[in-house]
Image 1 (cartoon, helix red, strand yellow):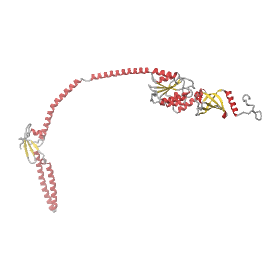
Image 2 (cartoon, rainbow, N blue to C red):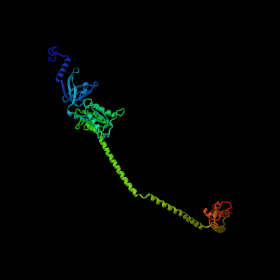
Image 3 (tube, rainbow, N blue to C red):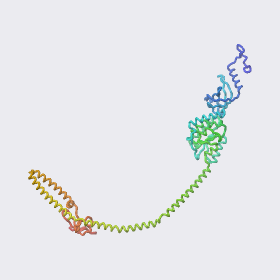
Image 4 (cartoon, helix red, strand yellow):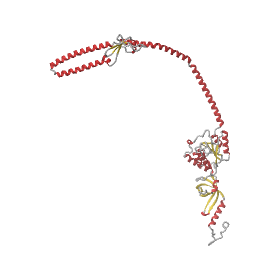
Length: 486
């Protein structure tokens, strides 16, 4: 005891040594640091806090206790992983005490995941949460462009991964490769990868920086701890939100990370990712040449078939000059027959018209018949009226009817008789002549209804309402003077 506390000789009221608080705190610190030195502690991170100063404070706990821990700001970038609550880790550092608060803590300068089991459990929890959010759904997967103009690559600037991608693209189909260098493991790697993916997605193609048509997120193989940056939630959500199709190529073919589920396509290796991004130019040229040959062959066969059908159709067509000549002959024959048939038909029509006009009665005869009928009707009506009046007079004498009634009845009968006479006069041909019409007849008294008939007659008689006029029609070339006989 005297070796550890040099001032232990001081006593007060006995043999019990007396110490100052600083001495006790310093002694405890020396004991802790001297006894444990550099140690590794396994536990679950809890009560994690990041202070504005950059220091990290949290506790390591297990079933039996809890150990306060701190990571100084200068050590954060070298930790090896990102501390999170609930993650089981193995912390490397040393034990130190804080005398002002009578507390001790572990100063950590290295963190590792506590075995693959803990890492896999953490990855599985994150996978279930992201799957519930729909980030792994097949419906949101975008197709890769067939022939991208610019390929964006998110990977480390050192190592063989970038060289393999560039070499493969140059060999298959040379295209511009836009590289966003990032660390692919360690503290801050996940944030840098997420920023690179979001930065490519935000590129609009202006200012000389082209916008990639497809992204490749790649790194080489490694342990599960080395690949944890590609299981980070920030990286996964950045890939899911990216509008550019993303190909993941993390690790070897047997390595699987959560970015493989979120990305649009998963490549087993970075070389395979480059092969997915661009086709083989030689194969495309060969396929185009093959399609060109098939197209030319198809067109040639189509033309041959069309020529054959045209030849068959031409062979089936008649001799066009002969067809036209026959049509001309038929047209001439029908024109000749028409020239002969028209005068004959006109003569037939004239003959039928003359026969019909010959059968018509003469106007004088019609007028005579009408006058005779009118006279008979007048005589009969006079006789009937006389008989009627005689009977009525006899009746009236027998009945002694007043004369005024007889006069009224006589006037009514006279009015009816006058109306019937007016109707007869309106139907009389003489009334028609009095309205200005003229009846034209030939020497035989036949009526002439057409000017052609009048021209053929040697003399015509024109009957007016008040008399008749005899005239001779004008011939062709004659004038009107001296040729009208009245």
